[in-house]
Length: 276
Image (cartoon, rainbow, N blue to C red; front, side):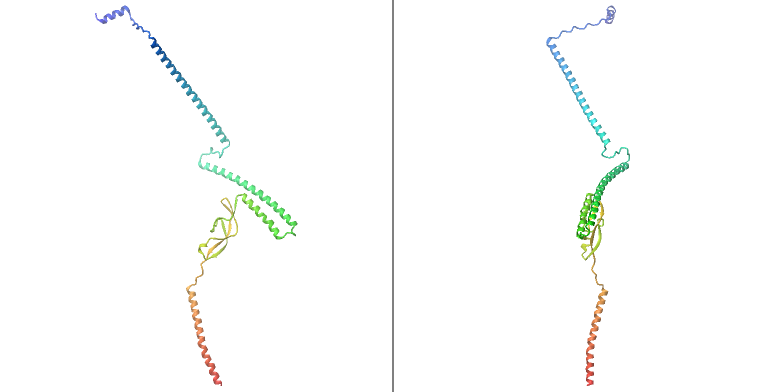
């Protein structure tokens, strides 16, 4: 019989038999100690991994808390800026033209406020000066028979200082403008001084009053006199010929008179002889 038929008979008699596992030999004590050490090492590695993961979680939590604190600070800053904006809120505007217009209006309002404050201060000073002027006039009426013209003049000269203080407090420049030649924007010609020096033409000869300027606006121009170049009179050729002809005529007349005088003397002598 073949081997296959034998295996088939055994299978029918005994059924399916599971092979028994070979007996495992007990390990030696030294080998057991090594395995235990390896197990402890693996446990330590796992614990280290767990500790590192725990540390990374704590760091993430700290970072998240710090970010939350920063976000809260930013939210408070944005809230404060919305309540008290340093510039006008441009959020409702879309186009650049509208933004520029709004910014210009805000600047104009600010300038108007500054101007109003300065103007109010100047008006207060003018009102005080007016009251002082009334007091001065009333005092002068009482002493009008006693006061001299010099005393009256000195009383009014005191107001020059008051008016200068009012203008200076308002930001007005008072004085001569720094121009040696005529500047029609800042200066006004009152008189002209003729000169034969062409280099002086257009230069300022004399400053007669102060100039007043507020910012870039000239309030009152400086009064000046200016040099003007004037050419000297030159004689024309016709005038020269006329003068020469007149000189020649005078010489001829004088010569004729000289020539006529001896003949007259001869006639007078002859007449005297005949009479004798």
